[in-house]
Each structure stands twice: as structure tokens, then as C-alpha cells.
Length: 79
Image (cartoon, rainbow, N blue to C red):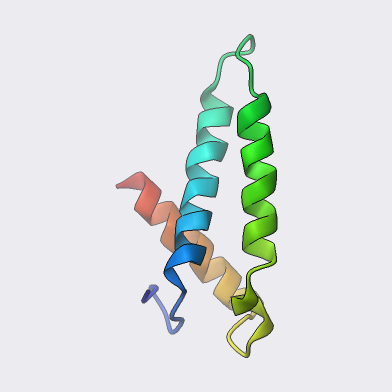
């Protein structure tokens, strides 16, 4: 998937980062009395999936690419 810059991100990586933001914002918007266990667990799972993705082991796996992925996912969620 083409990002805003030079990186071609795998679809599963973009989907995981997008899901991370959706989950994070749902957790942030939850009421103080809401049960947040499943969202917290989901964030941990998504974080591990994103950080451990094989894409980061290649030459494209730079800090700039990580920031680009986050920006791309953030824009997708804000649509």
C-alpha cells in the first residue's frame, strides 16, 4: 500500500496500525467506569504485531517509515 511518502507498506501492517488507533481512541473515550480490559489487551496484541512485523527487518524499516505508517493510519481513521 502506498503511503504519503516513499514507502510501500504491506496491507496487514497498515490494517494493524489503523486498528491500533481505533482501539486507542475508543479506550481514551471510554467512561471511567467502563470495562477496558479487552481494549487494553487488543492494544498490546496490535503493538506486538506491528513491532514484530517482518517489514521492519528489511531496508525500508527505518524510523521515518514508522512515522509515515503512523501518519497514514491516523488519516485513515480520521476519515
